[in-house]
Each structure stands twice: as C-alpha cells, then as structure tokens.
Image (tube, rainbow, N blue to C red; front, side):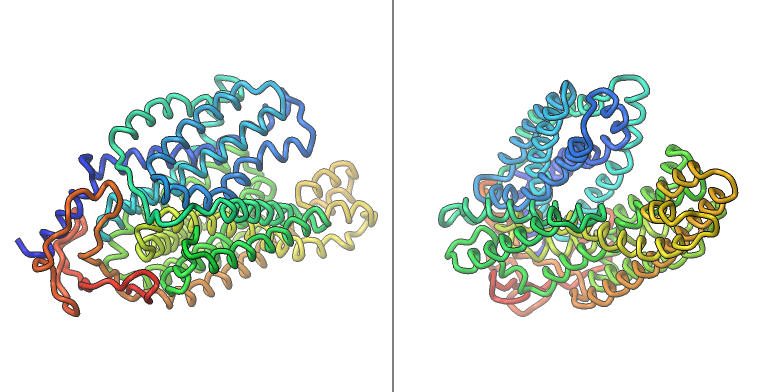
Length: 566
C-alpha cells in the first residue's frame, strides 16, 4: 500500500473515533432536517395560531420572526463556543434545548409564551447548525469523501425546507396547531442518546480565554442588522428600521476591531485573507441575495396572477426542490470533475439562464415553461451553494471549523434577508407606476392598490363595476411587468456572482497531510516517510462511488495565516 493510501486510511480511522463516519453523517443529517423543517413548518399554521391565541399584529410578526432572528444572530457565538468547549457538547445541548422549546411552543396558551418558545428554538437551532457542519468537517478529513457528505447534507436541507409546509399542512388537518412543534420531541429523544454514543468529540485551538465580550458584541450586532434588513424587506424605512441597522453595523465594526487586536481572537479574521474563503462567502451571499426574493415573488405570481391554490402552488415548486436534491447528490462528482471555479461559475450561469427563461412568464399559465425554469433554478442554485460551502469549509483551518461553519450560515441568512429587501424594492418600483393613472379609479384607490397585488385585488373588489375590473387588470399587468424587471436584475446579480467565482481555485486539491485535531484524533498520523516529500504530488485512491480518475494532491499545506492553501 502506498504512503498516501496508508495516511488516508489512518485519517479516516482517527476521524471516526470508533463510529462509522457514514452513520455519523446520518445523525448529523437528522439534526439538520429538524432545524430546516422547523424554519418553515409554522408558515401554514399562522392562521390557526391567529385564531386561537388572538395575537396583535406586532406579536404575530415576532411569532414568525423570533426563530430566524435569534438563530442568525447566535450562529457565530455558538460556532466559536463549540470550537472551544467541544462541538458535540454544544450539539447535544442544542438537541436538549430544541426539545424543551418545542414542548413549550406546542402547549403555549398565549402569544408571549409562544414568542419566548420560538426564540429558544432559535437558540437551539444556532447550537445545532454550525456544529453539524464542523463535526462533518472533522469526521471526513478526506476532501473527496467530505464533498460527497456535504452533498448529502445539502440535499437533506433542501428536503427539510420543502417538507416543512407539507408536514405542517398534514398535521393541521388532523391535530391542533401545536402538533407542528410536538413532532420534534420524539426525534430529539432519539437523537440525544444516539448522538452521545456515535458522535466524536472535537475541539479547536484552546489557547487563551474565550472572548465573551466579543461573542456578545457579534450576537447583538447581527441581531440588529438582521432585524433592520427584515424591516427593509417589509418596505419600512423609518427610524425603527434605520436605527437597528446603524447600531448593528457599529457593533460589528467594533467586533472586527476587537478581534484584530486580541492575541487569541474569538474568530480568526485572517481566514478572509484567503481568496478561496472570502470568495466562497461572497458567493453564498450573492446567490441568496439574488434568489430568495424571487421565491416570494414566484409564490405571489402563482397564486395571485395564475389563481392557483396554496397546495397547487406548493406542487408547482416541488420540481425545484427535487432538482436541488439531485444537484446536492451529484455535487461531489461535479466538484471533482470541474473544480470549484468552474462548478460555482457554472451554477451561477445555469441559475441566471433559468431566471432569464422565466421572463417569458405572462398572465396565462405555461406549465412546461415553469417546470423547465424551476428545475434549472433548483439545480443551478444548489450547484452554486454546494461548491461555495465545500470550498469555504475546506479552506478553513480545522481548529476554526465551527467559526467557519457559522460564518457560512450567517452569510446565508444575511443574503436571504438582503435579497428580500433589495428585490422587493425593485419589484415595488416597477409595479407601482402602472397604477398611477387607471381610468375611472380615484387617486386614493390607486395609491392603496400600489402597495401590493393582493391589496390591489381588495381595492378592486370594493370598487366593483368597470372601474374595479380596470384596476384589477392594470394591477395584474403591472405585477407581471415588475416580475420581469426583477428577474432581469436578479440575472445580473447572478452573472456578477459567476465573475466573482473566477477567484476560486481551478482544481479540487486534496491534502494528504491534513489530520483531525482534538480528542477524536487519537491515532497518530502516518510516519513522515510514508507521505510524499514536500513539493511533490501524488495520486489518491478514489472515494467510494466517485469513479477512479486520479487527482493531483499537493503534499504540503501552508500554516494557518501564512497565505493561501490552494
């Protein structure tokens, strides 16, 4: 057996820590599925919650937004804490809190208790999300196998996002609204003992104290920024939006300055000096910025313009989810064949092509066009995100895996929020002028109709007669026009992402000397004589199911902070 093959085998045995790494992957995917489902399962239950608890408008907003707001703001805190005290420990605490908060939410008898429970669910989710990726990074030290694992992980995320509304709808047909939360508890009861037995513990560099002040500053800054971005997405431009944004930016600037001055920073910002890492983070933000707003607009188009029911709308979007799953499962093979640069650029271009294709949507239903556009959209988007996440995680030092995973998830959340705000503004700017002068419609009615297509339909119904019908037709036409403008802006952003991805490495490099750190890496690495000498290359044995084409692997990795790894 060659030195390289021996080293790879030792790395896999060290990473497994007595458990099969693919079984560990199943446990991590179940964790991710719970968090992904819980992010969307409440959407269909909002009417039932409103009828039962009678929350006010502000309370209802916090019931929906408490989970994503808290989760996004605490990702860096718990990601870096996992690097310090143990990633499995934080994950198991997240399981426990998630189960307890689910029970609180299921049996909440007033809106305030439900808001607290949703916030605690966000805390649990923030513990679970970065821990799953950082443990995956440690359990799969071989990059080819890790790429396959990340593909499966991302496919599960796509399934969770799609299953949430369907599962919620099924439970609401047979049980009360609290059942959408109660379903988490048996899964948590199974995940806790299984995770404790099977998941290996790992830590990062434990030199120096954990920066509590820095962690709280980052959490407060992210909370304020995400809150401001969400309010922007809702079209609010007052002091309640601008003040949180300004405060959040100031806190994040202070956090960055603090980390640069500390000898042992909470988050090693030198990772951003590596082009592959910073470019991957930028690609994640840009992909979500361009696409998430479109999902909301597409749902409105299907229901308000084409007149489809919510169930029919969900079924129309199912091909997008299946295409994303297929891209995730095929991602490792594509990454190995094309390399990060071409894969991410190709994903951006495919998604831009899908968006341009969807500009052919009009006032009439065109099912084949929508099917083709959504399939291309799902496949292209998942290809982009897969390549960006894998490159980002592989570029980060292993002792910073939790922080790197938290940065990726935070970038995803921020990109999604900014996308809704930006594309929503573009949509409103293109939609409103078409309703300024509708014959027979009073100016006050036109102004109210310019807020949204749904409100335009309500105003038209109140007007009735020829004026109401004229307003309804003008609103439909303006919405379709605004959709086309928004799609073209989104396509431009996606092409900018394709250009940005050209800074990624051309080849998928696999480092045979990369070994797991922390308690899980009990076996020592291969003897120095068994690995290729510095400056040489070697061929690696293929990962299972990925073919047998050899891949060039640099034998020496530069130390953290000394430059670019690939």
